[in-house]
Image (cartoon, rainbow, N blue to C red):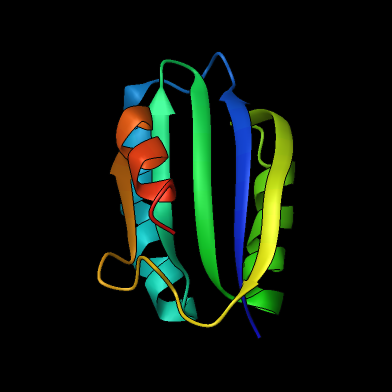
Length: 107
């Protein structure tokens, strides 16, 4: 079963722009290899991420994110079963918070 999971968090004080760039650079190919797609939106220290893919894989990644010391106050916003992924052409990309909100309106 495929799911879409959306969460929000705050970046830890030690996680700067270089840290975010490293997360995206490492996560994109790893997520693609596991069949995960989505979007990462960052605005200052606020993070919103949408993850899509096989349920067990997405939930495993989300648990890893919850334990990651680069995130604080991780809150699951939504989890839903889906028929198909919405971000399949992207893999995992970083966008502005405004872009993420606009895109989430279309899913």
